[in-house]
Image 1: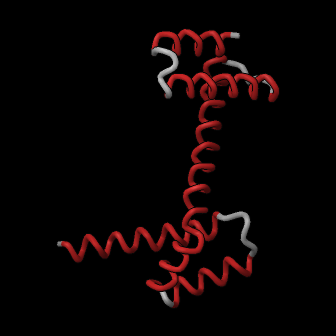
Image 2: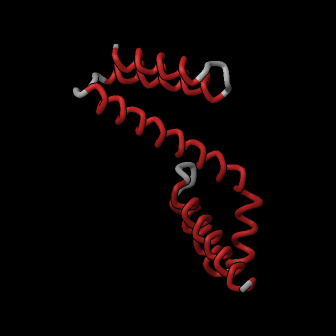
Length: 125
């Protein structure tokens, strides 16, 4: 059972590295092809070298991707709650305000009730 679990973990790590290679916008096509060949031909060495060389960037790219998804979700919820599509400038202002409010709420600077009240005010106007 342990070997099966480790085998599954290995494939998850391998696919995560390959996904990160193709998601990275800073690498050119040649670099992506080189890393992919390296990881496919020498998987253990390739994955470990990739993690050592570019592991920090993997986390940063994950954080940026999550922030983009969160912003898109908040924009969608805002538009759906308003009932009519907002202009890009108004949407950006509301998203920024909601992001600021969420940050204050997450850090404990405002209570749940204050957060809900402020959020309702931003979405209403």
